[in-house]
Length: 477
Image 1 (spheres, rainbow, N blue to C red):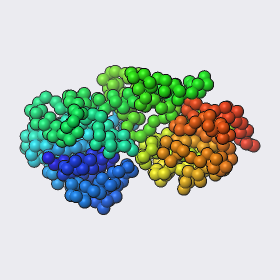
Image 2 (cartoon, helix red, strand yellow):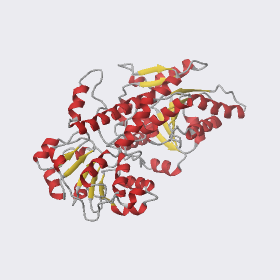
Image 3 (cartoon, rainbow, N blue to C red):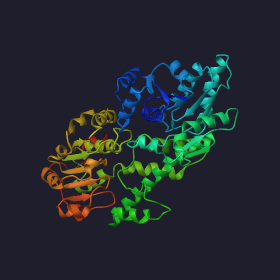
Image 4 (cartoon, helix red, strand yellow):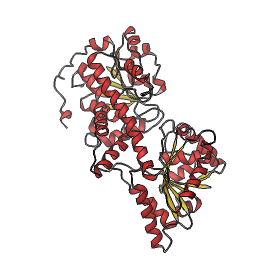
């Protein structure tokens, strides 16, 4: 079989690269001519460990190529993956404009049977809309509306580990509805993923609507675990407990497990925020409420400011004259993705309070600056107090505090003595709970994590800078 992947973003490129590495002939289609030109020249528009090398190898071997010719791409593939974005609309629902545009394009170029696979994360019922859009174009051309089938095959890729997730999947969810092409579609999907089922059956077969909802259910469950632990961490701070001990205590229960029990400064990225909102809106459209998922969103938005709250407890609301170092800007390590990143909220709040912010991220620096310019288009003058450092240590020079927002590996074991020498005040606000509070106390460094801290953090007094006893005017914006 031959494969076409429509959409050369994160999911599309990973899917195309991995399927080509399994030996399939793959064509990746995208309407962005500049992106296609870059891919043809070996450049990759996103940062994902191993992706550039995988694409380069399979491009050299002739198993994957890139085009913006829709007719060529549709003709090539026996299986056509739709892997375009479904950004949130203003009301939080998923915008299906790109998906349905692709469906119409397929219908305009279809000549023989094709299996259309929804890889994009889409609300329940999207397959029906895709089917209707393709059929409309076929009927308009005087062709049979039964010249294709639509199945659901949601992705479960973690940014930063996407290739491993694709090539060593926990499960492969495939939704195929009963109908004229049921047996053929199931056989084709079975053949496509045969390599992953040789020693252990990983494909979970179901109907299309259940497959569409499974993706949202999985992300909502994981997001809820994170928000639950963040609420426990905030309570631990109030009670003087250590959330890391709590995490290990409850994670040892086999019914709970250890995954996604790490407290922090909130989740971000392209999946959890968007998908929880879309799930709530899907339920609302059917007259149903999702109380737990709605609460998950509320807790997460509040959590993004928790480190700023902890900082102002020590320094006051006016941070004029303070320099705050920030380590980590991307929403998670091993990616340059700034979508819904907590750093965007944190840095804006620091700048509004008058602070000077010096930040370092090993990959996402330039994209972070673009995101902040977008967020602060009405407050752009405040960005004069924001700078990107060339290294993690450079960011610390003269800093009153360090905020750790992303758990990049090179932040895990820093030289604390060197850090202490560089900082004006040895105070770490750890949004990812990377460090040992007691060990830092022995080094004379104050530590405030999320749900854990040392005695020095409780005792630290920064005083109030002269003329900074009131909230800056910018806070009223």
